[in-house]
Length: 290
Image (cartoon, rainbow, N blue to C red):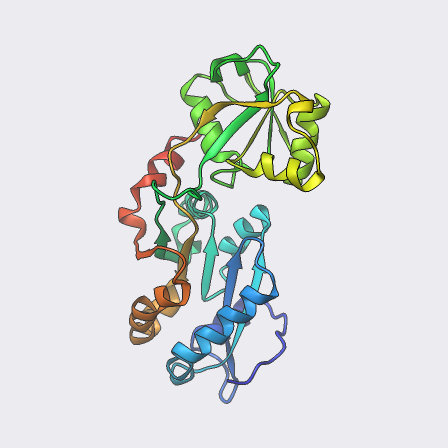
């Protein structure tokens, strides 16, 4: 399939060209948005694998090229879910369900449905968990001790980066802007530095990220007083994949092929078919949020 540079068009034209109502003779681009710190190797590997596995099917559906982009910005992905310019999007599950709840206020605006979810592995040493860490010298011993304190997070739209932690605090009666101060940082490194410098009393991160920061900076954790966990979640689900509803309506055979062959493109991940209606792990969490 021939690659073309993406042309920035208005939403009406993009919606038409992406999903089967383009002007006569115009080629369409099948746009995919990867999530996380996806380097050029992952982007290129995914594009090549998708072309090899489903290139003919995409061409038969009227797509003349595949365009793969990537972002690790929670706010940007949240907005992209509302803009609905991608055929396929990978997203943090918290970002997806929070955006869906916002879109649900005007149902005609919400344009995505779940296609796959990544299941957690309780036995894997790399299972994703969210933690709240404080200095080992701190007098705090439990979540309740954060009342009136400052918690540093990366984003409440990231499940392990603040979302699940704020949910756990809410169950303890601690809420931001009421009896909990929340400071949002732009990077994991700055979040860890804020804890070391005393700008925040505790931080919310995926388990292992603070230790990785110390190792990367060549810092001796013991010399800085050590860290202790006030909270450690159960293994959390990984990213979800969602598909544009208009694509699903207009290209049922293509979507069936995606459901069949897509998991093989990510052999290192445990992708399973999913739907919004039975992805209950986080829906209950989102609905409980203020």
